[in-house]
Image (cartoon, rainbow, N blue to C red; front, side):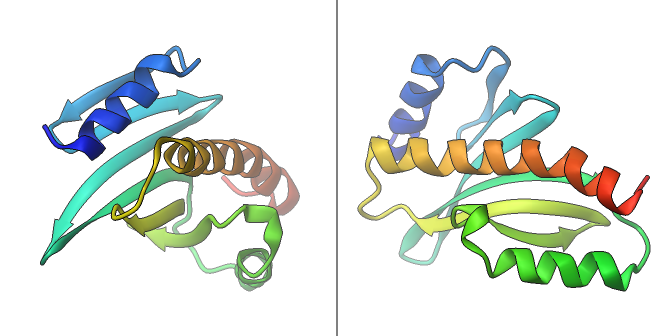
Length: 132
């Protein structure tokens, strides 16, 4: 097990998240409120990326007012570095970073940021735009 796997395991062990687990050698999860956050170590040529992502809501149709709002939100500091995008008909909150130089404090900040942003935004967006 490499140091980044150990760092993630230690974070989850010491965190206050009640629902959490490990899926495999390079995938973990936790639940914050109504959101499941997934944590991946994704190897790529010569390096590895940390990917922390959460599906906020299902989004199967085009809605320009909603999409414009998300674009403006992506450009704001409100998201704490988290990015919003669409994948497989879901709105996804994610944070991606190479693991080189990652320390436990930054790992905690990244995971917590995705968990908080996703949990705050899901209900807000559904109510504001009457989705689902």
